[in-house]
Length: 499
Image 1: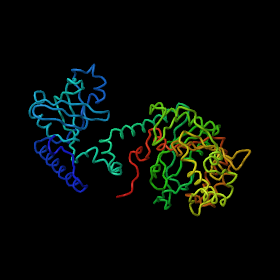
Image 2: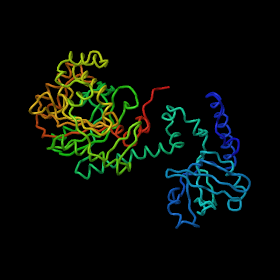
Image 3: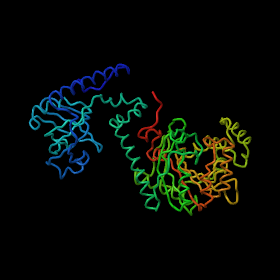
Image 4: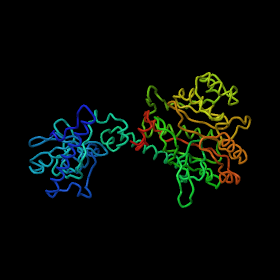
């Protein structure tokens, strides 16, 4: 490998940065020389590729001795004297290329020697196998399609800065094929969700991301300003209320996969901009939605990720067995040592939280503080897929109450790997009860709730049938299915603090 192909080294970031600048200048000089010789590497507008790297490998028996054209990024080069090899990488994988003076010609071989790692090239030539059995393209023609001006990082040294990987995801994708594969599977999973729901008669719809009133959940919203209307609007924190309006209007099975925004911190499980699946199904209850959720999760695990068990941190999550079910009260008693009968007032919750060593947020109401105990003591125990059902009404302002116990609601959340990935209700369709609960949220200073959505309540007064609803955090679901413990690893461009 020529000196200018070596990766930057050095003992400090400053030394590596200086060497990177030096190598960039070498590449700029090469670019100037190429243009002076009448060869602009950015001139080509297309390249007639006949096969991907993987297709040449897979179809070699029929392609042997035939001319093929491949294209991609030069990722390795072992070129000295009269011949040598290189590796060209496209989205499908790598293919070896053989450069030989007797085939290419002396001038073209010398140009090939001047190629830098990371250059994008097209190679046309015959497919053959080397003596070691490796499928290779013998280059008869090499076309420079784009000149790299930066230097690719050395894999084990240059990609240790995790945050830099997210800031320059394009470099991360070049250097880490496992990252590309994981993110490709994410896209496949989203497509498979659509196929799964479409096959069951659900209709995909689109609803507004800008809301005049923040609703459908409890979270701090992002606020923007609509100049023409001279009014503040919110980026949606949930998709729920508009989809319910469609159920009122007569649609019976609707879903949306879309972006949702919550003005909160960044962590291994939270990104302020995330993707939600929300669906609503008329004339069914949360039991039907529970079965749909389990079927969908298991389907994605087997059809997209090709596994029934996933290693997640120190645990193995098993999707092959029926998902467990526990009531909210049973889970609290098992892992917190107190049940809903012991937690009827804010003072009760504060007392038990003190006993458990849990610090509660200040100036928050009963429901929020009760939820803190559940999050601290119960959620980390829920490793295997588990439905927690029958939540307190204080935690579920949009869910229908139990007929025989109005303190509980027909609600479930699905947990796996120690955190929640899905939330479902038998939806509250009593407009009077709904108004009372939304007004109580405002009185309790629920996060993000400042006024009642009167239009939503008006819609309910026109009558909404019994309905089951579901929300799934796509990013979190993909985390578990792929065995990835950090949410930023399953988002192409996660939000980061500014430098």
